[in-house]
Amino acid sequence: MKGIALSFRNVSFSVPAASGSSDANVEDVVKSKRILHSISGGAQPGELVAIIGPSGSGKSTLLSILSGRRLSKIDALSSGDNTTRNGSQHGADVQRESVSGTVLYGGRPLDKRLKKHCAFVEQQGAP
Image: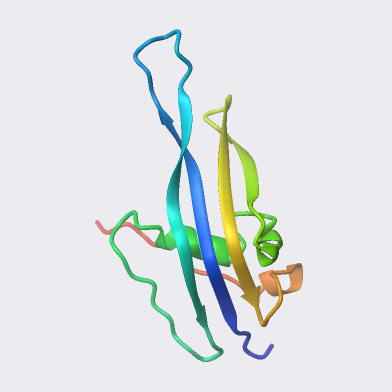
């Protein structure tokens, strides 16, 4: 397969951030914590790109979104629509993740054929 240009515009990712209450009668208010805020960039075939930043800045989250690991419906990003995924966290709690923006591979959204060629190696913690 020849090289494919990657472009991404205004990619944002949020997770819920519950603000706890000391009053048992008051329901926790679920607020959104933005992990990525309007990230844009790209890479041309043959280019080496480094994504650098401090711990917890969202580097792995961005790579997960770009590779299609984070959300199974990444192709919805090409229209700029918000996409959410429900997942289970510790059994009963429901977590809502939200991603928005545009991600294109060779001018097209990620499909099954292209996803086979998208990968990255997860970081390992230093001893």
